[in-house]
Figure 1 (cartoon, rainbow, N blue to C red):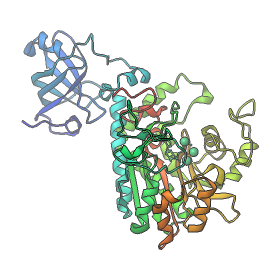
Figure 2: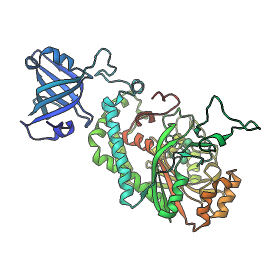
Figure 3: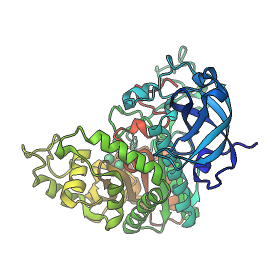
Figure 4: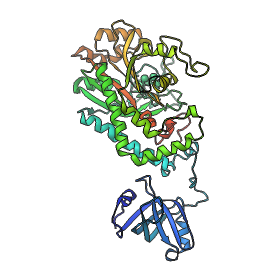
Length: 479
Ligand code: ATP
Ligand code: MG
Ligand code: MG
Ligand code: MG
């Protein structure tokens, strides 16, 4: 007999039919005559209720079929008398595949804190919360590829080991094959990379953008979706040392086209989640409601499904950085009338509290900020005529702040070189990047969506460590 996934069994209307299911026991309860086993196999948030006759299977076997154990069960599909499920399986055969000592098993039927589960990351896929998040994450990965496929974009794998530092921010993990106990040095004491396998300093990629631009300058519309590494002190709830980024890059797009694409993309992803992840999102929404109960009225956030729909309702607000600074300087975010990081004035980089204020309290809509001062943005962004601001755009979301960062790129060779020199970016080393501006250059644009920031938004989770299967932060790198 073939195994059927629980999600399919629960959908089946063939009462009387026999099914073989395999999975893990969540709970077992019952009396002297009958045991009720709640079983889950990861295919759905819902458990399948197995009804087992105590006399038929014996107390000993049923005792082994307890929380955490893995089982194979053959049973007949019946309408359920109990509340909470429509169908159940009347067990004919029960086999314990793997025993589990309940006294040692870390996941008890009671609700565990997320902090506790982070320490049990090796087992947390067996919980409702983390299996729901994993399924939503999968759906979102699929939706990303489907969106770009439908639009005729080509997916490009950009290198993970690279010698370019896309942002010039220096937050890189070095990669070397040199023996750290015996690092070869030059006469002047510097590391001699010529003995390294790559023969030069290399690092893990901080962004696939620059390589993505190369591809766009021939394929026109491309996107990358790969892991990204930043050695920044990521002890916030929004930053990881290893995260996934989606970076489309489009030839012949100006900043407006870029904003249109970003907005359409985010709305597509959220609509996809609402249409395809209803059970998991409902579970996550209820989980959030429980958590919110303990919060003060002014700290409560919007209900999850409502919040997702809210993003779909209107056009995103578009305004310049300069306009945003004016709004922020004239606003009173709390009783004291001050932000934790006060806005000094034009030129300041925005913190997530400022971004969230604009979205959640001022406009009550997602916001796209454009035309940032060139000093706080990367070298490749196209300069505006006045020479002070660049054609940058950050998309700001409720709960998250910056979810997307992007720009129109500088396509003019001379202007780009001048910008690089101004910012001390080594021009000779980036000859390959500059050649795209020398030979048949075109206006082009792109952006980066942090996949885990999207996941935070879609699942309503509060900490980025809980929306990636294996978080890499300064404190989480055990396996
Ligand atoms: P932030 O201001 O939040 O630190 P950033 O401006 O440094 O972000 P970008 O270089 O613009 O980030 O990267 C593009 C996108 O990648 C961001 O808009 C965000 O969604 C995501 N992102 C950036 N850094 C991280 C990180 N450490 N962990 C997870 N996602 C990140
Ligand atoms: Mg950053
Ligand atoms: Mg930023
Ligand atoms: Mg950014």
